[in-house]
Image (cartoon, rainbow, N blue to C red; front, side, top):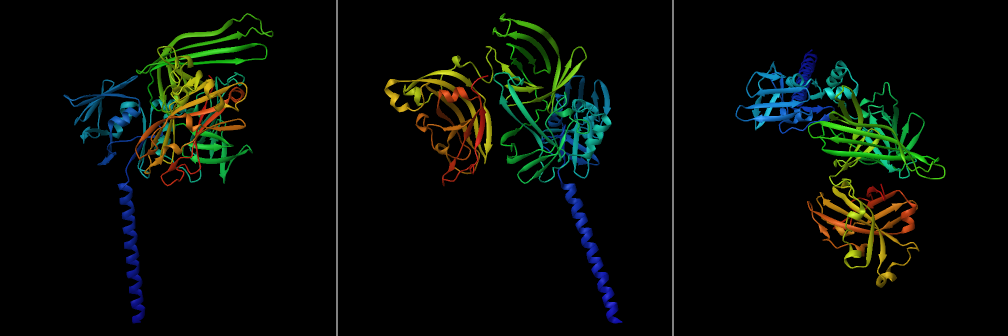
Length: 565
């Protein structure tokens, strides 16, 4: 009997111990959840704060400036009255520190908590964000995430306010392991105008919802895509294959978070340009030819201003080239022409939202092909280049207006250069914490000095073309690297050519962590190679550390380059 009683006591004690342990784990879990920082997303993009959002007595307080600026609102501060004011189209508001009311479009609004200053930063109740801006604000307690959908984003997404609220309340879906996320694209030139691509032909992959991908978008662009109504495919990643629901599959290689290789082609991830304000005139001109000797010429010009206003001009016309199959007139016939349409614009996520003065509106796909540079824009199905005050293009300029880069060919008077094409892409890529920025490149036809002619045999009878590139290497790694171990290779159809090391100016060899250096490379190729190819790729690698190991681990950084516009 005593043993039975002792056993019962042991069981009861064990139960109490297990219950206490469970209660302890539950309390620790709840405490850890409460300690997790609150994250904020505007139009599905994260917002960075100097002070994390706070939860006080059931009210969430957020830092005003980063959040309101992410919504496209201009802010001003009056230190004497301790008042912050904001404005954008159709909206004005003001609130004073420690006041229990604010003013929105001239009307008083009660605050659940007064605005306050913490470490020099203004904090306001989260509820005020929606009241002041018309945005939808959602709170997901499980994730501890705040999702804010602006009025513009709701419009371009085609959502009702109720549907937007439902999405915002769900928080931010986490990407499942082994899935792809984001907008990836690649381009190639359409120099003869036969592909009707308006100069550049683009291919897109937009991976969404962990299981779906779209390669075509509705007229409203990327943000207007709704896979319940629009054409989306389901996909799976099986080993090194991307398998689509239309029965097609392609080889897949994930080179980095921002680069995919699909069916042998490299696709770059393009990030959204939220609330970007532009300044300048952007022009897109294209020509599409036909076998009959005629063609279709068009141009579109947008003038964007920092104050959120714009104007646009459009021209479309038939042209003839004077060939036997044309009418030999050599003139253009205007089909349509529009001048001076104007209004206000907003860039939201991947969408350019245009609101015209006549009450109409338009939304178009938008991203920066040379992000973060704003010298080139992708709007709808066209590419736009900024016009400088002198009429030249902001990313490139006429070759005859440039001086050749100073390489050994020019400084030692080995050859004279006739510049054929010059471009300044200023585009950066990074691998293993080594950043390379392609600042510019020049194509030039060489006339070799007779005294050096014997050193340039074997390039054929039509002469030599020099590709001279200027690029910057930035060492963001923790290792010192050998700059002069880096090779530059030009790839084209059926051939690849490496740079001629002896023709580049010398730079210091050891680049320590945190340092950068500008470098030039020179690649020589037969004129026939230059004339018979239109697609070129410039590759950088390998790059060795002091131990002789390749920092890029047998991978290369690659840039598409042009020989003409």
